[in-house]
Length: 59
Image (spheres, rainbow, N blue to C red):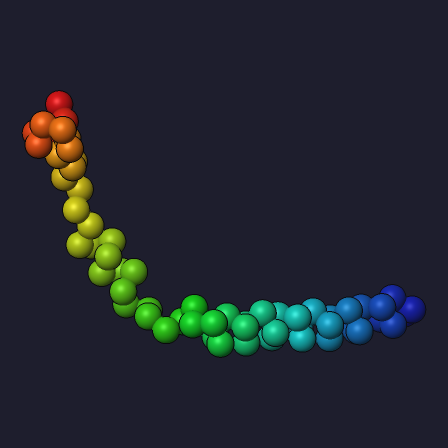
C-alpha cells in the first residue's frame, strides 16, 4: 500500500511531462502540414541524376 505514495505522484508528473512535450510540439509547428509528407513520398523522383561532368546518366 505504501507504493501508492510513490506511484500516484510519479504518474501525475509523467502526465504533465507528456502534456508539456505535446504542447511544445504543437507550438513548434510539428502538426502544421499533415498531407505534405505523404505527397512527397508519392511524387519522389526515383530516376538517377545525370553525371555533372558528362551530362550522361550513370551506368
